[in-house]
Length: 114
Image 1 (cartoon, rainbow, N blue to C red):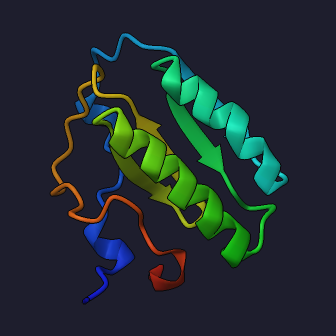
Image 2: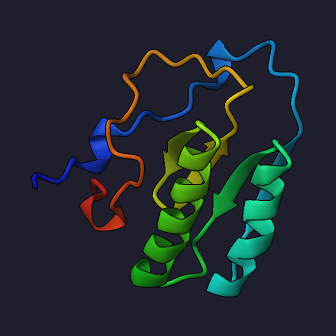
């Protein structure tokens, strides 16, 4: 199975989203256990932006995998914002980006471009 690189995951284009009418929650995750709260926010159909800078790559990958699974379960989308920052969007929020959407539901942090 070939792994897609992080460059294939679309970066969020803020300028293309002028009519976003949903609550956006930005959360810094300091421990893997905090993922449950982020998943509950997503389940409540809120856009969740997670900053994972405080976690090791392996722990950040675990958080991204759990969040991507929850996002996939509600037919949402995952966007890579920066090195360890991701946006998880429920299905009722339309994101318009000039970049193609990822075919992988969960990005691999080890494939980040330098």
